[in-house]
Length: 182
View 1 (cartoon, helix red, strand yellow):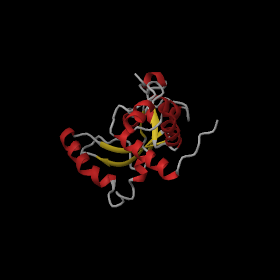
View 2 (cartoon, helix red, strand yellow):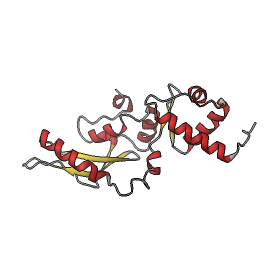
View 3 (tube, one colour):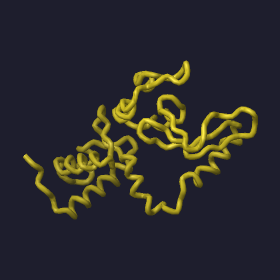
View 4 (cartoon, helix red, strand yellow):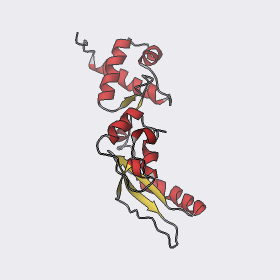
């Protein structure tokens, strides 16, 4: 039986309240917890959560059934943050880290099954890393890629990894999803 459409303003208000509520819980929240906290029917909460999940504004952990705010929510903040470049914010931190460790520091973003380097700070010396801004590396074959997927639900990472085979780049490259999740 199709879900009865709610008053659009009520549905939007509930969806936004649900996003705000879920965002306050790092461990995520179940449909029942959300509906109880916001005092809305579970069926309405479920309908809204499915819609938000379909649009990638929330992610559902397959094992626990709990919802967390999805990364797509960051796209909404672009207007508020339009004057802030993540690289500009990260550069002083990256330089500090590089100076303390004397190691190359990278900033990357996830693009499907690849990590894309968007900034690099390198110490002076003879040893240079074979990386550059704009370089793309498969997430399973680089430490920055593994860091990018470390806190994404396993089901989503499996979907990302399924886009292409996990090719061996070095003798120590992880080539199976099960080893990556250890």
